[in-house]
Image 1 (spheres, one colour):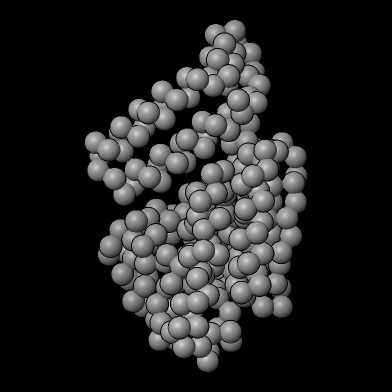
Image 2: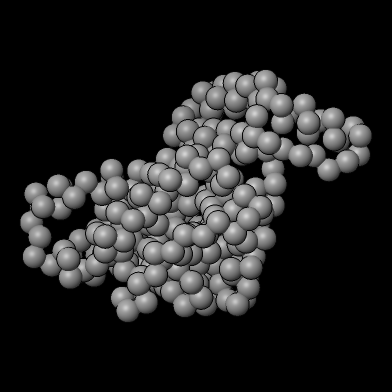
Amino acid sequence: MLTELVGDGVAVVRLHRPQATNALSLSLQAALSRTFQQLSADERVRCIVLTGGDQVFAAGGDIKSMDDCGPIEIMKRHTERVWAPIERCPKPIIAAVCGYAFGGGAELAMHCDIIIAGKGASFAQPEIRIGIMPGIGGTQRLVRAVGKFNAMRILLTGRPICAEDAQLMGLVSMVCEDDQVQSEALKMARQIAAMPPLAAEQIKEVVIAGMDASLDAALMLERKANQLLFATSDQKEGMSAFIEKRVPRFEGR
C-alpha cells in the first residue's frame, strides 16, 4: 500500500497488491487501519482519496486465508476493530474506483463518503457464491445506500452491477471515463480540502449520526453542530470574505 501527501490538504492512499488484484489480505487490512489512524490525526490532511489504481479497486477478501478457518478464528480477527479507523475517520474520504470493487472491496468503498467510479467499474457482494455473507458491513451499508430491494438482489444473487446502475441506485456519486477517475477524484478532493475543515468534519459527523436517528433527533444534532461552528475563526473568515468579495483562507480554527 502506498500513501502520498499530494499537497493542498489532500492525501492519496493507494492499494497495491497487483499480483492479487488488491485482495484485502490481513496484512493489507492492518496497513489500512494504521494509515487511517495516522491520517485522522494529521492536521495537514483535510481530504483523503482512496484508490486501487487504474485497473482494479479491490477484488474482495483473501479467500485463501479463510478457507480452513473456523468461526472462533474468524471472530478473533476482530475486523470491526481493524476497520474502525476508516469508519471513524473524521475527514472526508473519496473512493476512486476503477475495475472491480467486489466483496470486501465494495465494503471498503462503502466506508467512504463519496464514490467516483469509472464507466468500466463494477460492484458486487459475491460472498453467497462461496457459502458465506458479507461481514464488514456489506448488508447494512448497502441497504442504507440502495434500499432493501436493490440490496437483496445484489446480496442474494452475488452478481455484479455496472457503475451506471450503481449510480442510479444511489451507491455511486459520480461516473466518468475510466482514465478520468483519478483526476476527477483529486479535483474534488482539492475542492473539499479548500473548505473550512471543522465545518467539513461536522457535516460528516452529523450526516452519519443522523442516518440512524429519528428526524427530530437528527435535526437537533444539525442545529447544535451549526451553532458550534459560529465559535470558529473560519466562520468569521468565511462570512467576512463573502461580504468583502474575496477568496477566504480557512485555517481549521
